[in-house]
Image 1: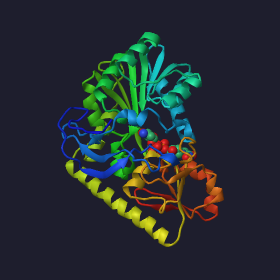
Image 2: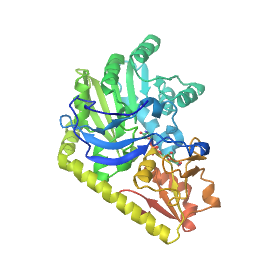
Image 3: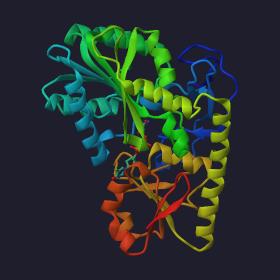
Image 4: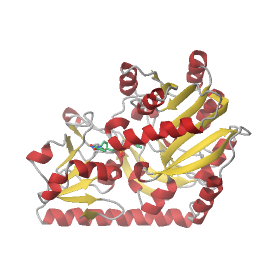
Length: 413
Ligand code: DWN
């Protein structure tokens, strides 16, 4: 199974030009290693961005086979209390909006450990999850949920329709950007969706990535970096129309986009035109914006490397909190290793006693912070900084400096 270079845009099939940003050849962001694997050759693939001149979709130039990334998955949605609250509110919002007469069925594509499914069921809605990660799908089923362990393909639609009927709510959160064959998934959604149904996706927004310089959102799982213009272009080919869009705080700034079959009864909100206008004003489809972003990312690397090198010259011990996929983009793009960052802690047991891909930095449970406190703690899971700092403020009181890495490394006072 090897990667391949994408020749055409996955949303509109326009031939793609050369990348405007190249972060280098990198290992997969969630491919943490066991100790005995440290000397094995790691799979790497160019991590570069290209944009489509027709529909303006920003996307990776190279595609890694999904099986390599998603069949056994270490990321667990429920690890953070912030996300547990987020998807509780999400389910309530979706149900409140679903005016399909007597909402009968919700289907969550990329259901992970079943966090959203659980909230739909708690609200009295029958819910079915779809996820290719066997470890996570098994976990959800063991908890009494219904999770189909496969990709959301035509056969999956047949299985769901035959056993549960059409879906009044279909969701795909932090997964739509991960899909290479977006055309087939949109067709499958259109086939599964009831006539009055809603298709809701949530994803880190391209607008935020550019405005906040969150280049760490770039990794091989994230094939697309979605703006509303590109999404509208894709949906129209599959009898889907966007009728509302809201901004959420997830992952530092996400968009939640609501769609329906063209002509269904939801009025198109002014939010859609306003968001398109805001993206137009941000010049997200202009060539200069992409090159401007690429230059800024290179400068951020210089700042981060200088920051860490200065701290190490002063003999400081540096650790990280959170071993998110995005943290590995920062670490590997800056060529950090365990001489720069002594260790990282993560509360997800699946990542503990493992080593980060590429840099081979050890990941421990947060207990080590009591036994071997660092002088500096870089919060790689910066999108959960408030929740994390609340847990470890004892460290700050004893002198550890907490660092937010992007857009410029800054000490939290
Ligand atoms: O698209 C994706 C994004 C949305 O989520 C997936 N491809 C993978 C994942 O990316 P990520 O790993 O960058 O996401 P998170 O949710 O920002 O990762 C947070 C990390 O921090 C997790 O490894 C858990 C950890 N954490 C922790 O150790 N203690 C988080 C909290 C809140 C904590 O208290």
